[in-house]
Image (cartoon, rainbow, N blue to C red):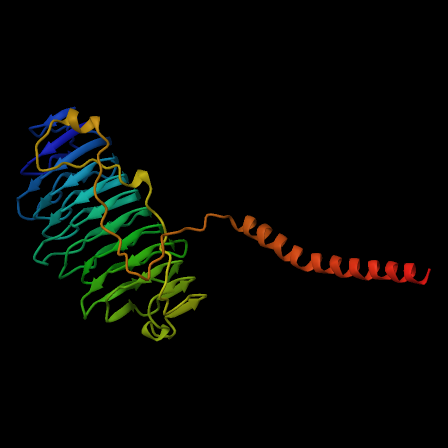
Amino acid sequence: MKDSKFDHFLESVLVLSQVIEKKSKIVERREYSDDSVKILRCVFSECINSDKGINGGAIFVENSNSIIMVVRSTFRSCRTMGNGGGIFAKCESILLNMTCYDNCRAALGDHSFFVSADNAVCSFSHIFECGYKKGKGPQTFSFNYADLVFEMNNVSSNKKSIYGTGLNFLNCTPVAFRLCHISNNIGNGLFRVLKCDENSKFDSCNIVNNSVYEESSLITFQGEELYLRKFLFFQNEFSQFYHVEEGSVIVFAQCKFDFEEQSIGSNSVITIKKCKFDVSSVSIHSINGDSTIKCYNMGNNDIEISTILEKTPSLSIAPTPTPSAFISPTVNMIPPGMIFREYGLIIFAAIVIPIFIVIHCISTKGIRNIRALN
């Protein structure tokens, strides 16, 4: 299914293993069985599942054999009285690539999506301003029991939640969480990671301008070891930086913090490796590329799908905080081998050239003395 728009539905528009397949604007729900579903360049706008406790505002999947691909599609103002404001998916595998979730809501949990799958990939996607305006409601999204890749995503400006942590990774083994920008979110904690294994990698992410309630922690972890590498923590508001269950350890490696090390606390559950604290000037990881903003999005006007497809649609990214302490975003893209060769040559030249100069001076002085004697 591709190049379609789903507008103002009053229940889940796609039910998989039952699915609609039609080009142009969809005006009614159709159902049939299919284990493999591809959704490309589609818009789900104001799809509302109003039955209490029913999951999936726009897409509902509950088929352990289903393979779901959602690419370059937008979920705008979708909501449900159950779980998964945009998507509720229990399936074998799911790919969410260049997807946007704008102002989606779910009464029971996971405003943007709920995923439980053997394999899951979410990349180049935006989760933006999801949740209730008055600050009630649950977490932003959840991944459960998945071999998970979550990379190059922007999770920004999501609204207050009074229960449930914002980003949830539950029993996912392993997790590859990297090159993500997490900013301006408010809620009952930011990360909750439960039982990820030692092969999980959390790498090179910006954690900026997020706020958590006084009784909550920015990071909650239960498992053996959570290894965070090259994370940037800047201008976040929290009273407790982490909460770790008994027997768990968090390792911070090559991370940067704008507060003192004492604010984390040094004890048996925290390990610090080559981190910098009380940093006032930082270079944020640059993760924004053209491919991260090419999601389909609808304005207030109900325009035809053909008009949408003629343009290059985009969804505004949540603004990155730009305090005076920020330097223009940069990323060191020189491979380690090149760095070694580059600086190795400089050091070699710095040592060898002076030696040659000294030898030259000594030898030329000897020649001048001989000529003087003659």
